[in-house]
Length: 513
Image (cartoon, rainbow, N blue to C red; front, side, top):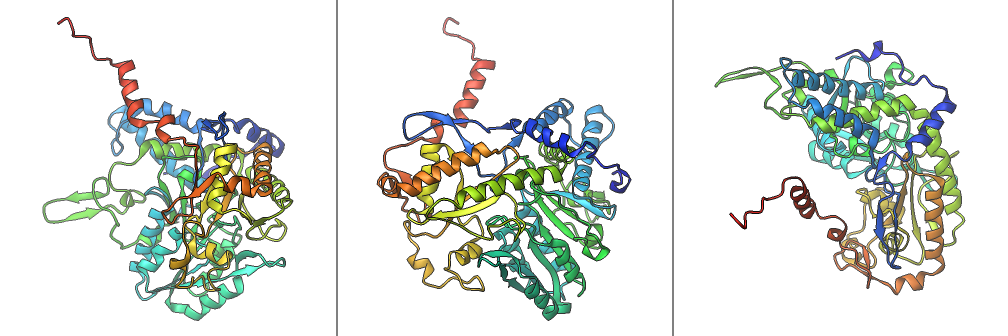
């Protein structure tokens, strides 16, 4: 695989030109303006504001994969054209990942699972096995379950560090004083610090390189969950000083405009030394007989057993290549302007609460905004935004229950909810929030649509409440009492497959045979 250090920067165009490229790319995403029926009897295009859950798919990368599939064959061979082309393209996809995060030659990129969940579980197992005497992990109260539960499963003790409170009394980034104290308290028992680069609840970013330096001071490692941040702002493996380099970074392809692609681990090669691969099978061995097998030492090969998800891997590689050409600095600046515009407009709505630090000058954040309307449940707000305005947002706890419950005042400072919570949280009162989240395809017009809709809900809560009922499953969701739009009316997989077959390979008429 080529050295990332020897490659010239991909971003060479002036900043102003790259901003123009962003404008040209906004319409290049599948599903951005798909139309759906609405409760008022009309049909209209959706406004997709659910990117923190999953991004829409980038058509430019789809086109690259379509070209690549003309040559499809399995990898691990060079003796026919297709296999040779696919093997080389798969290596280029790995290299695109390493370039995207600025990883030097002593790091490897591993395609793993369907998101950061697979990567973080694997690395928790690997690091726990490599240093069993270091049986403590430190994480924060703002983590997604994917960057919390694997550490609880594989290490003896997990310490959850609290967050800063900004001058306005809102939750900010991780409390660095508390983090450093926890690091030095556990010292030589600390295996690693696992932290999100940006919260999927508030969008607030953490100083990951300063955290890595603090972990390294006691001989521990730093593991970063970059699922939320990777598509929104530049992120580097290396810092400004050698001690600031991250040891492990996990990413999710479906959150980087490449749904259908695998998850990613970028990690120091040395972390896999003398460790049996977590998954074994074809493609990772140099010798096998009935008594023994010898695993290759080559990375990433030894960590990618079996036939790879080539279409997904190439999709992600092409996407990262194009994003890097445009420049994540330009993409970040564009999103920051949109986020500030949205925050200012939402703050003007009476009865609306935004969670986390509101001001970008106080806390760095990506385009994720969570809120609640005082007079309406989060599930009702989310359903009404979809049913009446065609706006796709997400609600509930976003797989970050300790943090959401703490922001709502239910959990204590340690993120622990009262025992009574499981008894008192019913369909009408299930705690949660409404989350708006942006992608490269979103514009001020999308924000204006959401703000107008939320203003209407805030002004007429009784009118909306009369038209909805809670779903009696404990989720906190609400549904319209009369309007229904079954998924199969819009898309049915079985029907679509049958229609295609009938059109392209119809059954011959044999009635007269």
